Image 1: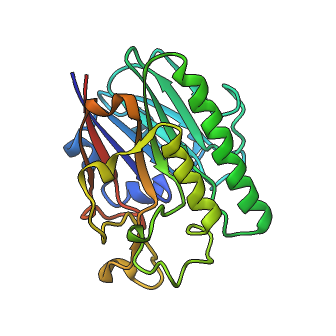
Image 2: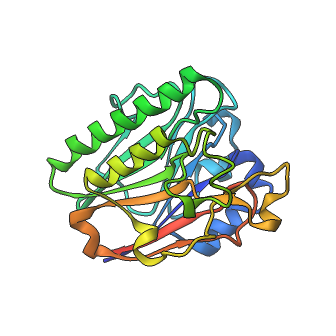
Length: 256
């Protein structure tokens, strides 16, 4: 069976709804769509976003309104759904949804941004560590593990347009990049780099400087698959032409 998975940081689901999100979803028809930075509670969403024909819909919203949040639209009903990476119901910043299916686990994660303060940078690094702890637990179940989301770090110099200028900026700090090295060392494969080795392929551009028009961007949105399941991976892509957010969607195709 072949699956098409897409992940997109929408920077506000209500904002992107006004820019044709539901029409895009109807046309694209992914088997699973993962969203980050939804910035909404369920009571702020209309029926068309909460109940999409052909999809089961799950949200994890931050306690603080208008902040963070993730969602998953899935055609196949999962066996179970957990919110957060610490325990099943505790996700105060609305950063993760973990879905289990017969053949695989699907993790949609909005990793923290470390630019605000030294404390938030440490929170981000701790979150990376806790995430790897979850992956280690899931590996014991002997299923494929698929991870997607906004990782908020560009891994290598080809993953952003201006690496030297940003070498001391959160999102490209050595200690952040080392954690992505650790992801790979611990058995997660960066799916996009399996198929695409070239620079200049980005997923986020600064709105204020109109960086997208000049392709001065960062690749900070990823799909990972556990390395033993790499043979199931058939394609990985960036949908750079899709607008509506400061991020664009990314995706993979997997066959079991």
